[in-house]
Image (tube, rainbow, N blue to C red):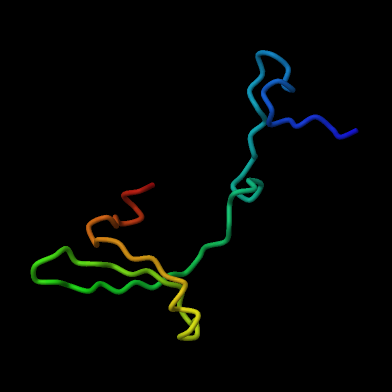
Amino acid sequence: MTAPDPADPSNRPRGRPPARPTSDADHPLVHPPIRLHSTVVRYPVSPDRRTVFPPGLPDAERMTTWLSADDDAFVPLERAR
């Protein structure tokens, strides 16, 4: 028999909110910072495109480890917090 899942609302005492992590370090979804590089390709007629990728990858791996989108889809980190 397994222990009840505390995240399941039916297993919580009524009237009590779920337990919250005491700090970001305690939260299971917090990861160490990830460094990324980006390059913008400017086009005269169509939207500029930004490609984001981790630095230091071999060429073959970098070819499959990237994300591209219109440059105006990216916002400064400070605005997103």
